[in-house]
Image 1 (cartoon, helix red, strand yellow):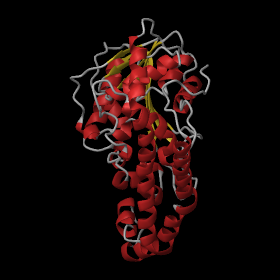
Image 2 (cartoon, rainbow, N blue to C red; image 1 turned 90 degrees about the vertical axis):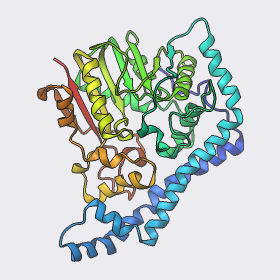
Image 3 (cartoon, one colour; image 1 turned 60 degrees about the vertical axis):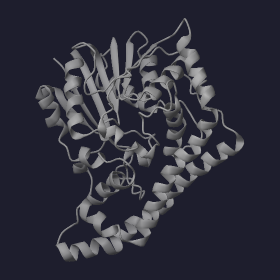
Image 4 (cartoon, rainbow, N blue to C red; image 1 turned 180 degrees about the horizontal axis):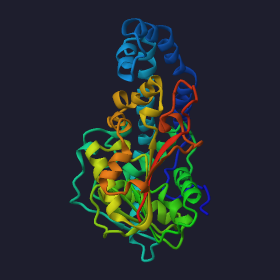
Length: 386
């Protein structure tokens, strides 16, 4: 078992940098726990009654947004939420920038070692899909794919530290809870599965992928992502942790792996950062790559059909104001139908509603007004192959 300890690739923080990041995390907590609930009060006090009078029914999420976006309180809180998102990357970025040359050298040293635990393969000719290049996802400067130079790890280092602030946690950890969540779910539903080859689609820096390698030490564990700097950092991070990962720069829509080559294929919060067409292609690729008797599990937040109009509006906030333009599209899709079109037999396609108690409200798509009715819940789309 990997201990939750600092690793050699995590940035070194000076006192003022730590204090600044702690302030950002606390600020986000205050917005979520104290201020955001006021938007619900505005909705119930003026927006909803006006809609019921004018429409004669409950407003949908689009109508709620059009009505509430002119309310001063909502405007104030939305502005603060967007500002807090940008503060994450400002505070983390200054810390990473100060020591990026050393981080690049450290990562290069891991790649040049004679004895490596895993492997890294990059594709300089990979075309970055427009759904990633057209917007800085999560407002992260340059998104996941941007490189500063020929060998840099900036995007990975920025993400590894910044994601803790995104979850309103000031202190860094291994951040492998998503992997533990996925493993627990797979163990519960498929106790006899002992995968020989595992694929983590959209693995980023491999923070969940390392957990899979620890859980199934005899398996070949692969992670793919489009971001070269993310993968360079992830490779060095895994080497520092002495975990064998096989990381490669690939688009999950079309990989170079052979047919039926994985017993377990997973993704966590990948779908909401892709387009409708890309999601269809990823499910087709999942079907192509899944071995007989294997399992594919894709996890993202709950579809809108499970939520009230207000909760739909709350989740949809990121679509309009937080550089997550595909969240709304994802939550309106019938994933079971798309999985069927991808090739999976209807009797092998399922949905589940597991709970992930460790996630922050922003990541889990729960209600920032602190209602708690959808907190911690996700949608698992999973399928098997006969």
